Length: 77
Image (tube, rainbow, N blue to C red):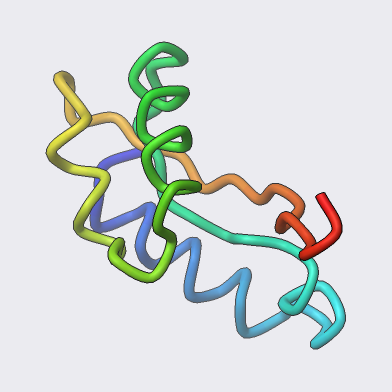
C-alpha cells in the first residue's frame, strides 16, 4: 500500500485496538521491503520517541508500505 493508505490503516488499527495492546506493542508504518523494514525497525528501537509516521519514508525505496506491530521492550530486558 502507499504511504497514505498505510497511515489510514494505522489510524484505524489504533482506533480499534484495546488499551492493553497499545501499552504492550508498537504499531508502526514500515517499508514493505523486508530489508528496508528491518533497518527501519532497528533504528526505531534505538529511539522510538524520535520517530513519527513520516520517518519510514526515508527508508523506503519503492513507495510500498505496511503497518506492523511488535512487542515493546520492557525495562527488564
